[in-house]
Image (cartoon, rainbow, N blue to C red; front, top):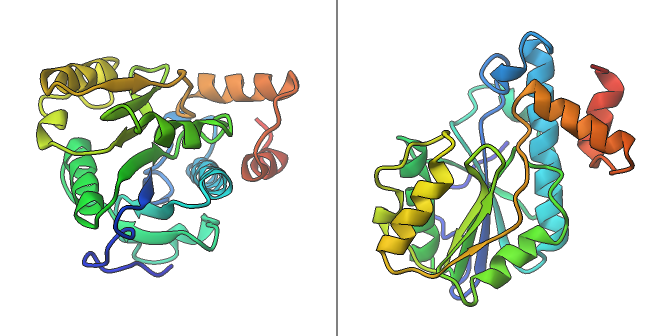
Length: 234
């Protein structure tokens, strides 16, 4: 998997930029809350399936945006070999530091490239409705900040049409207060905000059960997750 240099602009001036944030898939270091229901290798395969399905969703629904995968660290071997990315995706490595540091650096890089609107998507919500990615960008026509709130108190996407590092100050990341504190910071900046419908992340065994219950109720599984559950039946 080839990675672009940090100096490369993320998009053309005045364009839109969609960034998919994902952990580098290393068994034992991704989806650890699914152990021991799944083995480390199975949990990693689930992570790759979810990331691949999210990438396919963005490719299908955002035909005019620049598409990037930002992995948490540079793979040293074949760790990223399980990821299947559409051809339009380019690849980079996230900055170091906390999640807030990494988000801030990504927004700063995109806007320094001349981006008009930037949305960063998480890789843990592969079953998002197809309308959501374009809805997020449209919301930024009027709002300064758009959030897709996750059921666990975080968010499955965050987008801006401008950026200020104070947006991510004093945030308790990966807690039930993450979205609430981000919105409070946006209010303190005087920003207009837009909220999308809540959705769930695929992090815990309860989330897997919810996903499969939805599938039994008629909700189609995206292709890579469907293939995963054909191979590894819980």
